[in-house]
Length: 592
Image 1 (cartoon, rainbow, N blue to C red):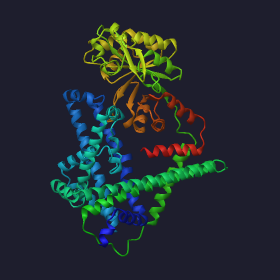
Image 2 (cartoon, rainbow, N blue to C red; image 1 turned 90 degrees about the horizontal axis):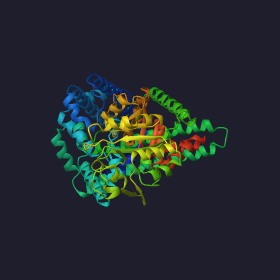
Image 3 (cartoon, rainbow, N blue to C red; image 1 turned 135 degrees about the vertical axis):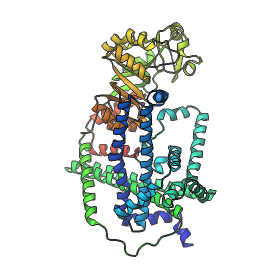
Image 4 (cartoon, one colour; image 1 turned 60 degrees about the horizontal axis):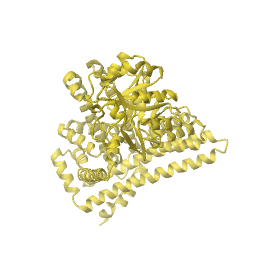
């Protein structure tokens, strides 16, 4: 009976809290140590090797739309990148070996660097390819909620792009499919959640570990218990982080009225970062400990006398961490990290003020003075150009036909409706003239279709290149070859390559990259800017996301909500108080 009570969710949480309070340094060392090693050693090394392979084999970029070409024309380079991918998966697996084994050694009071190294090497030697295959499958399965269960710097790069989710939110049928998908993946992932610890801690082969995990998670009561425990850990983390963030904000709001404002801001932000580090480590420790408890089953004897703590190392580690966080805190609160991105209206609209890619919307949006208005152009049946985004006219005009099968006259006489407004599809000539009349610079996306004429891009570039250059316009496209043609014909025009995913840093000579914001990182921005290439984030509509991209240092933000973006920039430009800066930083920490 005693054991059953101890194994109840609340009992386990209090048990692990007591455990963490005694050995916090060891737990932080295991979790943060592996994270730092991967973030600052493994990832940069693998990215450098990948970049070298791409340059030597002539691979400009890796995306879903050029995989066939890569396999056909750059086979050796693809083979090299696959080896790097395999190594990456193996290293992530090793990270979990370190964490599971490290926790087990801490709880048996036998953690030393030598013991941990021996345990990790012993387990790593036994890893089979099929185990790595399951490992990859499992983490792809839990992408929607993986950051709340297993979190690593490498796996955090795998995210569902916002534009994919937006597709499912367009109708209740799509939303129902999405909810069912989440429910099924959550159920499957919960049933298989003990597979990894069973393979690592007990050395079980994959099939046996899966069978054992299914057995131990069988039944509604067990599923409910697992869900409640994970939910409690998540709730605990949210509440503690919330109290930490709000406490820091209110304390700094008071200190801003005193002569200790700067010292207080640095100290409070330092404490917030340290506290957040401790809370996240504690949450992971409670999760991993629970899985170890479920996977191991048998108890172990804890020595009555724990080995002496190494106080010297604790003091050194703590001091260096505090100093590092204090330096970062000071540079942030003093505004040294502030950036002012270009404001770019997505498809020429602002807060649903008109129909996308139409002249009335352009004229309305231009009043807010964006740096650029982003639009889409497509070819017509008679080789002219219209401003239109979708592959067909069905959603906006109710006509199930692509622009390439209609003439310019037919298209420009077609009414499109959106956001309760109506307008005619404009020709690019008319749209460009309207933009020039109000001195509005454009970011023009060349949308390529299999229905285009063979020289579509060439015709566009020769017809409008000089004019766009004079207007200081820029061009971007998802089609790499289209941009190469544009660069060849108009080398002075700035061109940006659109990337829907941040997989590997591209090896191109483009002027800029337009990156989908979900997977865009500060590391990508730093690399691009070091090569004198700009980075534009799209489509960023939430104010917190806008601040995240500004913190990342992007050169421009493409948004549907231009007024919100200009408001966020204005707030940061008006010398915000230290308390406001702390509040904004905590909002960024919440979405990490």
